[in-house]
Image 1 (cartoon, rainbow, N blue to C red):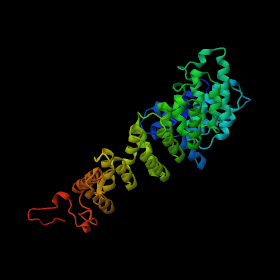
Image 2 (cartoon, helix red, strand yellow):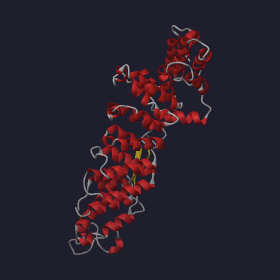
Image 3 (tube, helix red, strand yellow):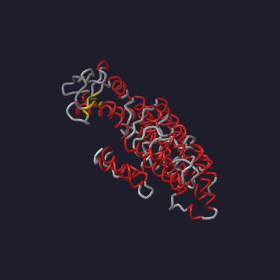
Image 4 (cartoon, one colour):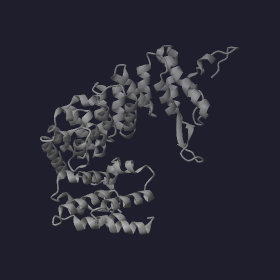
Length: 428
């Protein structure tokens, strides 16, 4: 760490009740400048977006610490006991909150001791938030005590619940990081209707994906059951789309196809469906099956967009069958054909770039070619698909193990316009 002498002075100043917390903050800033990307102190200090990954690291053990964190927690252990004065206890709590922002190893014993101190629960709220940011698991019982204490205080001072203060939100948003995330429903049941509204729960919904996915899904389902209007709220939908589990994907598909989720955000929803379908075969199969049965509209458009980003022949044929009566090549089908016809591999010359190459589609081309003699709408669409494949071959080169003719054994020419040439001979 840079500025060695200054750091030593700051460490010695940690015990001072007047400026010890400033010394801890300075140690944090010095460490951050040396070890974190230049994202700005506010973003580093308030982000909980890495909670799950940090939580997993803590569960795996062998968490590193730092000299500054050890210096801070040495003072925390000294002052954070019930035998010390209230002033020293609150000083220890404040120091620990800053120390949790540094690599601090395993300090669960110290944290538990601080949470049990006979101090007002509101004096511990910042410590709980810093626990969440560092990947520590927050005790739901303490969070529930904080909610009840605030509601009791608000019976006398209603201003404590003003949305602009954020005090109530600060307690509610801690449940996803706790050892019992679903206790949030107990807390919400104590609130008045304005504080149960979708906009009042936005922050909870934003951080909910940082709790274990199965628990987050159960919470979203319960919230939607209690207040169906939440299904139409963007924060609720975005929380659902961030859950990387099969059950969340199937639930989203059910709600969406049933019309419970609005269809005004097809782009983001289709991207989420594509990611789920690539990871979970059951989601892919369900998505294709639903697409075949849905009437036209935004819901089917979202499924079509999601399927178009898959390199999947079953998805191609489902779109072909649905679009066949129109006889025209849709944008979704064209995208799907490109994904089937062209593969990608990392470039050997340029980091982060990809090289494209053709993929064989002999069976698909042969099946499409077999539809042409019918002369109906499906035949026109089949021809358009074959021509699209040819265009991609022209752009990226022929595939060596793929015949140029879709089905040479058929005896029919490709393209059909070349069936008869000047002297009556056949071009195959």
